[in-house]
Image 1 (spheres, rainbow, N blue to C red):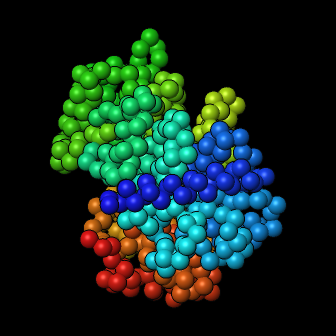
Image 2: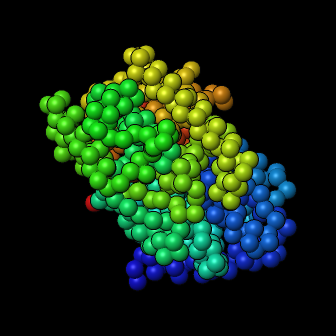
Image 3: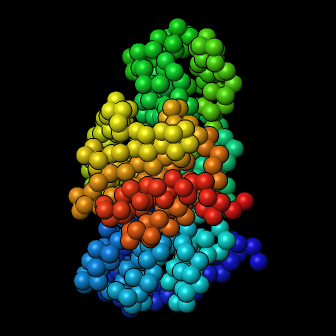
Length: 479
């Protein structure tokens, strides 16, 4: 039996139990992570519950920890569905909640947790041999549950596509999907919810004037153009590109294929003039884009990557409810709020990155591992966004990146990433979980992206441990 067939079989009893919960429960609480994958997965579950006429609430949290579980224990909710969270916490959940919970997730979990899940309360991709780091997101897992509950929920497939993009699972050739994400995408395409095109991948391809979109695109980083709006404007104008239409700035999505070829030609000539190889830059600029057919043109929701940025922004600055409302269909007040949030989020990120590189003491780079000290600078809920953005910086190519900040409760939070062109076999999820456990903290994640929380008095020993672990075959990803 294939891995996907095993998952399909597991969905049957899981959904039967979920139907029973809805029929026999007064109120269900959906608890999810505050990032875009968490917001999408929580929204998909909430949408399915709404269609079943269930009473439910949705809450986003920064991570799973004892205080979150204690709050669940003291709440007067009858049942909890946890999405994009909960890996490694099964024993704590059982102790606090008995059997009044489900976990729908895609993060690696300890083998003993898979083996002791007698009640089938954990629906996790890894239990069925599916790599949750690249083949399916939490939103994808939530979608599979929703569609197994009722085929009418297949119209939520486009939300799972946003989820996969948000969690950087577009890791196939030219930013395509692999694994279960491919099957979910096919469903969304068959329902004419998503169209897929090979295009120039610029940030803001549906919303920003072309020169601004080029300047805002940091992957690939083009020295002299990235973050330089004036230089981008001059380049395109000198290349004969018509940037305005009746006085209105044109966005990339409005250009013809012939015009796009001219845009690429102008960029290639600029790169070549800098004595750099233009082929690799152009290869990185071309990839698959995912357009949401039912969203308005020039809307921040039209492009799946832009949609995911808005959701991340909402969650990271404490407005996850706005993102959830947008995912569940609100296109009025909440969309306006989301657009304002994105602007504030981008400004905050820009200031963080500027401070990290200007305050030299914050970054320690040994050529293999890079450690960022965000104490007194980085808000803990922004940690993952900062580490993801830094991982695309040319100056950190090939590194394993570890970003930390001291939280309000006196603990240290870490976010780790594999930077561009990193060939290390180290499994960051295993490293974070092992050393967090060793120092009475908690952590985990994927091979290329993970995080943890540890007590502040163990910082130096923890840092020494993860430095050693990055070269230890015991913590390598199986190939």
